[in-house]
Figure 1: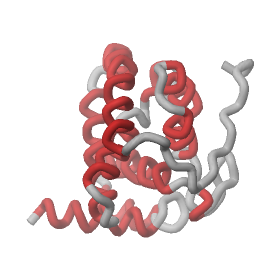
Figure 2: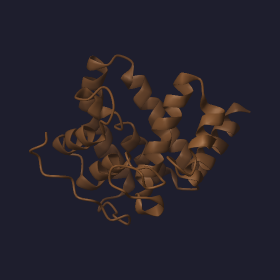
Figure 3: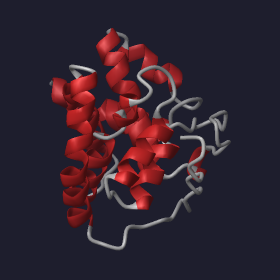
Figure 4: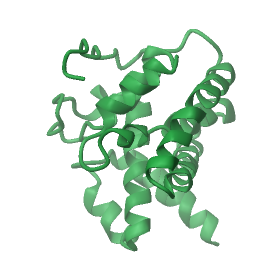
Amino acid sequence: MSSDPPIEDPSPQAEPSVSDTALAALIRERGEPLLEGLETQLPGSAERAEAIGAYALATAVGLGFERAEADLWRQTARLANSGKIYSPEGSHQEAGARLARGAGIPGVVCDWLLRAQERYDGSGPGGLSGAEIPVFSRIIRTSVRCDELITAGALPTAMKELSGTELDPNMVDALASMLERAAT
C-alpha cells in the first residue's frame, strides 16, 4: 500500500457534485461489499458499522442538518472501520479510504474517511485542527469514538473528557443531546 499515491488533503469546503440523497445511495451500494468483507474477517463488525452510522445520523440531526445530508453522513460513517480488513488494530483509516476509492466511492467521501483520523487539537497525523478538519470527518470520528466508548461501558464521562482535544466539542454536544433525548 505504501506505493500508492497519497490521498490529497481535501478542501474543508469540498462539496459533492451530486445530490446528498444520490451520493448516500451510491455509498450504500458500493460500500456493502466492503462491509460484508469486514464482517467475514471480524464478526460483529456489521453491527458496529450500523451503530457508528446511527451515531453519525444522530449527530447530524442534533446539529440541525436536513435528513438527506444526515443520511449521507450515516452512510459514510458506516464505512469508518472498513480498513480493518487489512489493519485490524491501530490506524486503519488510510486503508479504508483506499478500499472505498477502489470500490468506486467518490474521492471526496474517501477523503472524509481518511481525515477522520485527525484530532480536533491538531495532534493527528495530518496536523489539521478544528474547522480545518472537514465536518464530515469530525462527525465520523465522534461517532466511532462514541461506539468504542459505549462498547467499553465508559460513555458518559469519557466523551466529555475527549471533547476539545480529540473530538470537536460541538459534535460531542450534539450527539450527547440526541442520546439523552433517545434515553427519555
